Image (cartoon, rainbow, N blue to C red; front, side):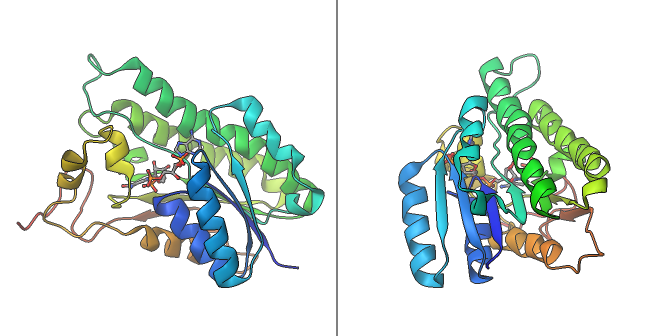
Length: 252
Ligand code: NDP
Ligand code: 8X3
C-alpha cells in the first residue's frame, strides 16, 4: 500500500511543489487549501500523471470546525505518514504602531492556530496508526526579526517553538518533527503580503536569484527520506545571495 502525505496549502508555491514531489515518489495525497478550482485541477493532473490517489479538502485552516471535517475521511486515509504543515502567509509590512489588526489576526489564526488545529487531529492518527513525520514550515523570519516583520516574525517564532514542543510531546510515539526555515522563495507569498500589488511583490526578488518552491520541496524530501533512526530537527535554507533577513546581494 502506498504511503500517504497530507499537505496543507497545496494550491500554490511550496505546498504545490511538495504535492508534485510526493506524487513522483508514489505517495497518495490529501491536499488541503481554500481554492477549490486549483485543488481540483492539481488533483486531476497528479493522479493522471503519476497514477496516485488524491483526496482534496477545501478547508480554511483558521476555521476550527471545518478542520474537524478531516475526521470524515475513511479510516484508510487516516494512515498518514507525512504531514506537511505548510499553509501560511504574511499580510502587510508595517511598523507595530500602524499595522492593521485584521492582518495580525489573519496571520496568527493561519500560521499558528491553523497549524495547531490540523496537527492535533493528524498527530492522533499517527499515534494510532504508527510512527509518522510532521514537517512544519517556519521561516528565517522565525529565527531573526526584521524591520516591520513584527507579527509575521512572531508567528514563525511560534512555529519554531512548536517544533520543539511537538518533538518532546510526541517522542513516546516515535513521531519525527522537522522544522524547515526558508529565506526568500519566489512564490505567491509577496503578492499575498502586499495584497495583490504585483509590482511591489516582484521588486522583492529584484537583482538576485531567490529560492524556487522546488528547492524547499527537495529539502523536505531530504528530511522525509532519512532512515527511521534519523530525524532532521531543523533546516535553514537560504538563497546564496541572502546572508540573513537584512543582507541581500542585489546585482541590478
Ligand atoms: P503561497 O502564497 O505561494 O502559498 C500559500 C499556500 O497556503 C496556498 O496554497 C494557500 O492556498 C494556502 N493558505 C493560505 N491561507 C490558508 C488558509 N487559511 N487555509 C488553508 N490554506 C491556506 O506561499 P508559499 O508557498 O511561499 O508559503 C508556504 C509556507 O512557507 C508559508 O507557511 C510561508 O510562511 C512559508 N515561507 C515562505 C517563504 C517565502 O519566501 N515564500 C519563506 C519562508 C517561509 P489557498 O489560498 O488556496 O487557501
Ligand atoms: C518569508 C521570508 O524574509 O520575507 O518567511 O520573512 S521573509
